Image (cartoon, rainbow, N blue to C red; front, side):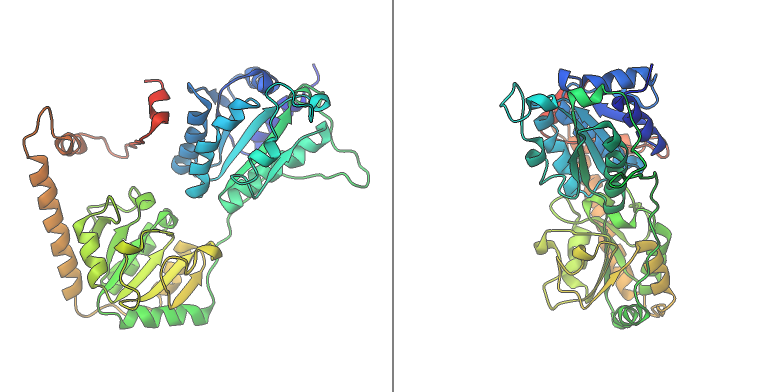
Length: 398
């Protein structure tokens, strides 16, 4: 049997390292579902009870695995259901690819059953790349572009597949003018800011007497460098919610989360610091940050549009968190006085005492804080816990 366009797409995703997809079947995506069955579990299809959950699962996959999450849905209402989970991925900057079905090409534009303008529907959530495959020779570069852009820009992309195209025999692009031959693969570069900017940032941090660090998801692969800079500057480390699992709470100087679900220690540190270093975060809640003018601020981020967007920074460092922190550390002078770090640690110790006391408070039928405190000591090493709220959580199979 000659491979179909769907067979090629599944094999191409395999080349990109995709091991599982999250999706729900429907007649608008039957060709892809048949190809997944023929693939014999490589990649594997994970089927939740609803397309919305499939998109949330793809986003979670990207968060936990550092690889692109892929979700699959049928046309019309199935495609619409993906949007909520895809917006979650977009707002959290998680690389996610949506593959959605569409009605046959010959019926498009006739208000056919379950026909929607999917290009328009996904144009916002997948604004970096949304394309419809209209002939077999196009499938190669559309899949490659969707995967590469999602990975490199940490965003959502979308591929739309009319159901008749899914079952067409696959054809390679012809060797002629106008054809495109694309390839597989992308690796992030290690980017370091200009020397003059690093020198300026180091001067600010060296002159600060009460340094605070706000860490976000961008520190995921830069923990050692982050801790080293914190030790050199005598800083405490507060965590935006996406960094909660990335910086251990039991490290010295870690004040815990910041914001609506944050700790008193983080709040006090931000209210008293005179210098702020923001690393890999777009933390949005201004009321939990220092007053403008209170602190001299430095920000590190690999995404230029994230720089200077939340706090009036004095210098912005456009670069990879690990490489930039390492270069910055070479210019830092160890703080001779640890008075500030001890004060921060005192706030941390007080906070842990309060949480223990709150967990011990009697309640009927049970104190939820006691549940989590008791669970924490019983969990194995390197365990991953995930939770969420909202209607989608009611649809996940137990």
